[in-house]
Image 1 (cartoon, rainbow, N blue to C red):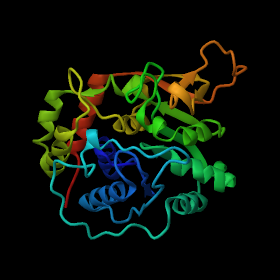
Image 2: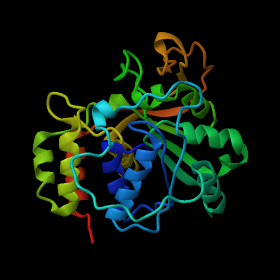
Image 3: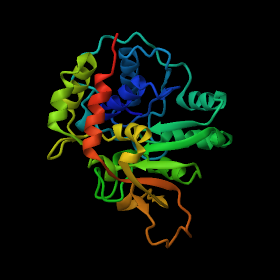
Image 4: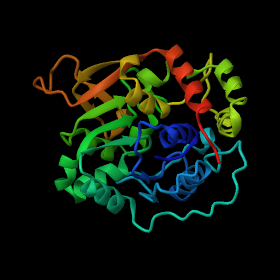
Length: 298
């Protein structure tokens, strides 16, 4: 992940959800630099007193292209809008690739990897340790779009940031769930929901502060893109999906595009991703409020 405001909300819910056993948080350059995303992840782990969850620093730049952040959306720090105390927790001494590999290797059963930033760490893991695929249950990816982009006419930010990494991931043969803009731009957090968050304890106050600063805004509310991955894991019935063969463009004006071969011109019937197409936005808003209401901060 690359916290980032919407990543922060996703991590807050993941860390406080009883149905999840979060084994590891890794960071990557994206919304802001990897130094800042790592610090922000540590802030949240400490805020929710989840000191049992290690945070490992990942890739500082994409595999090939130059790194360009989204601080114009998330602010210079990546998480403005709330005054966190100075962080005492240190990042895990392992790099993200080693940490992910060792966590997967030690797992009794295959684990789900949720990616809410560029996929650089995952791609490098697959390049360095192809033997670990059997320990990955599925990849739930925030990113991509079949209906147009948010950083170009066709590309979504996470895929555009490192399209080469996305291409490696989509060609890996691993089970993939793609939760992209086709879902996240329909699941706007309404202004009413945002106002309610401010009344839901210290966690609600913190998240309200972050989201209020968030510059990604549409008529009717704000899209918390990354949170939809967590919602999908808990309530897959609320998101309409369909299997497609997804191809990633890595160069030219379509760089970062995720193309579904609707007409089966290239894929010979092979599909590599379950793609989110629609969402129950009202259920998403209600669920978000319920999750934040249940958050306990010591």
